Length: 267
Image 1 (cartoon, helix red, strand yellow):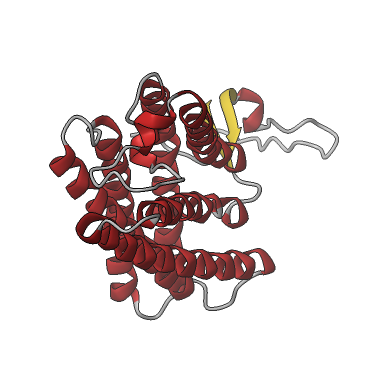
Image 2 (cartoon, one colour):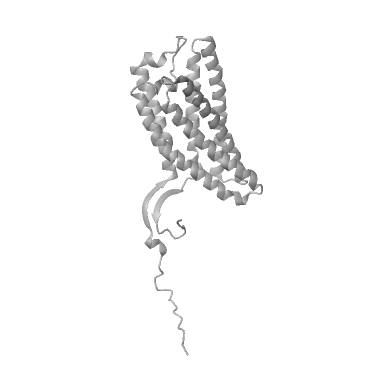
């Protein structure tokens, strides 16, 4: 007859902590990631504007109508060298954070679906939001690497795709955000309000951009291209600010690369 002996650890004995075996290779807050993703193109855009305005004034103000113009367009200041190289490098480096942010939102919304009654509609909105975000990122790359000086017809069509995907993404994001948050925290309420304000600014800028583009392209009005360019800058900055609201949605979350993390399973 064998006897089994139970071993009981006392409260004073140290408990093996699985976190002691965890190896942390990389740690970055979502706030810092978003800051890089937004500040890099913004700072580069302002640098391109300042340098092109000072050193290449005639080149960036030239239009097919040859009318009086004060503010050059984004396509103009990023279509001359060396600004075009600066802008392309900035966009290339900002794509990585943008892709990560798109995936973070997707996974977060998917995890929130369990709290929502109308799950099928939520899944449609979440997937639509995700793919519109990716299309917008692809369109940014398109208008960046195919400049208006190299191939204007293609550049123009990709720019239209960017505007459409950007505005659709914003409105779907706002709808998805409200759908998965029946009750909102203070940060979520602030983020939701700012998102709606920025979308309103973007849609207004888009309408003014279209109006002044028509006035410039077909009627060659003085300063029409200036108002077009100003609307374009407002649209671009508002778009960047909209994406930066992720810092309100994930104020403390971290992006980590680790080994032996106890709550995760690798494939």
